Every structure is written in structure tokens, then in C-alpha cells.
Amino acid sequence: MSKIESSDAFESLKTSIGSELKKLRVNAGYKSYEVFAWDNKISRIQYWKMEKGTNCTLKSLKRVLDIHDMRMDTFFNSLF
Image 1 (cartoon, one colour):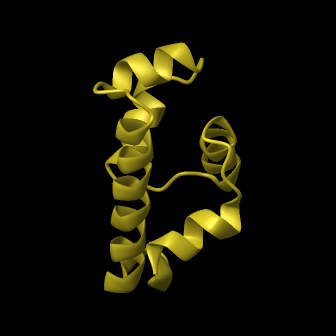
Image 2 (cartoon, one colour):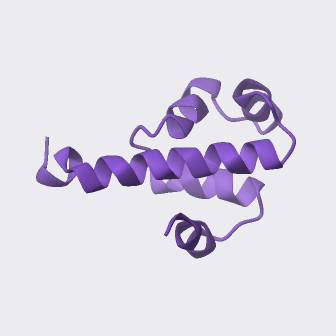
């Protein structure tokens, strides 16, 4: 494991990303991550992991943000 992956700051960032994705989903009217994933043709396991704050790719994150019509810079600004 690299230093960045083991750092508290990185873990906190991943958790914040997951929490923000969940908030976006709920605000879009989805109570269930499974229904959101199904409706948007995303693997439900992949999306569940994203919301739980596991390491996700930027490509996957961008795909979800595109669904919410949100730019990546806007998303990251909302975290801080």
C-alpha cells in the first residue's frame, strides 16, 4: 500500500466522496442505490463501493457526475 492510500487524509477524502455521491442520489429522488445503479446502467456493486468510500476511478466518478449533470470541479468544491 502506498503512503497516500494509508494516510488518514486520503481515507477521509474517499469517505467524503462517497457521502456526497449518496447525497446527490437521494436529492435526485432515489432512496435505493440499487435502483439508481439499475436505472443508470451502472454495476450496483461498483456504485455501492463508490458510496461506501472505497477507491474508485476518475472515469467511474465522472460517469456518475455526468448523470447528475455536475462538473468534477463543482463536485470537489462541494467537498471543502
